Length: 244
Picture (cartoon, rainbow, N blue to C red):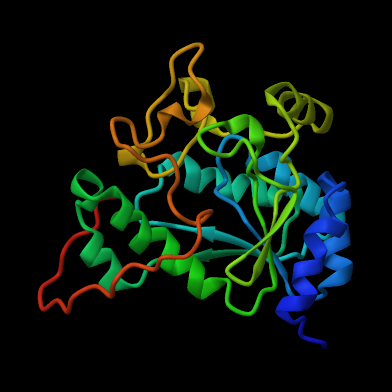
């Protein structure tokens, strides 16, 4: 298998600028066999992205970060949606014990570092060796995502966003057309779902991502930002319970 160089990867964003949806995923799978994976949160919109992946290649690796603070409903949705779409490449990755210990209660005082330990560091390990990662970002999310491109090279890895041009009506239409199951918390007003301590329902008229990190000057967990890995957690001699 030929390993693409950084110069090779730099060419693809311009070539794929006009692609989206399943066509973008298929182009990347052809160009980068064995070097493509997806990141999925199994949130309120994930079924649309995962359905596209299932149409192209149900065995494509799908990385899911279990932070230790996911809603029980999200755990159930991971199982049910994976079965519904017959995905065989779903891989659950978790922070290591030292990261969990160092992150205990950080969501209250330092949510950036909490996300760094619980999400960014585990994803960095899990995604080593992949040349491209698929994600579910859309320009319509707002909160700094308005200029997201279908393909962009960041930190030496291609980031592909097949849903980038879809608005909320387009997401709803995809759910209806494909009879996709919804996240169980959506009925309770949750429109963007992450860890339970940092997620709330949104009021009518609020943007979906207004429910993430309420009250904090924060709009991203960090996995969609240029890399800035957290410092290694300090050595611990006593156990600290996880707060799931």
